[in-house]
Image (cartoon, rainbow, N blue to C red; front, side, top):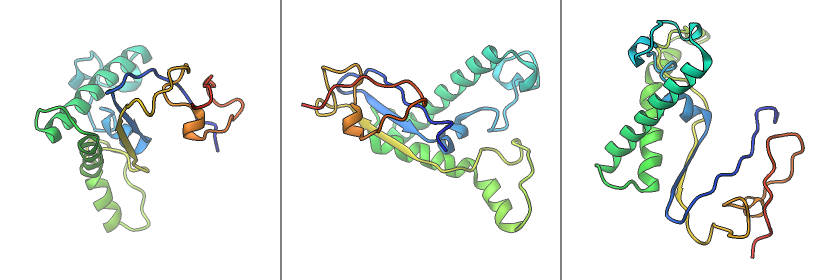
Length: 170
């Protein structure tokens, strides 16, 4: 099912740290799934659904970026993080965040987890983290994309996200 599939391109420079995560990691950086209220983020209303979508998006993005930076900084000891440290920090965060949910499900077989993010924070899903430092061998200067479709071996799925105009690798 590719309805939620998207391909996008972002220019990177040599030495940039690139982090790719699945929703099982990304959702565990979201303040709502962590049991935070809008008021805790300095917003005027106590219900996420009562706020303007643009306001919610901005507040959640800022929270997630700060949490991501904090997690990675703690793992790297305040130094420039390595890709391995990023993967460890985000993977461990997803495990810690979903601990209460996993424990409850293990002790309550055949029952659904209560929908209460304050008591059972996070979302359990496939959790994948990929981090790497962009290097000259990955960059293709003749392309609008930093990593070409050919390197990633992505077939052209029509109708699913923007297509990347990449030239063949040298």
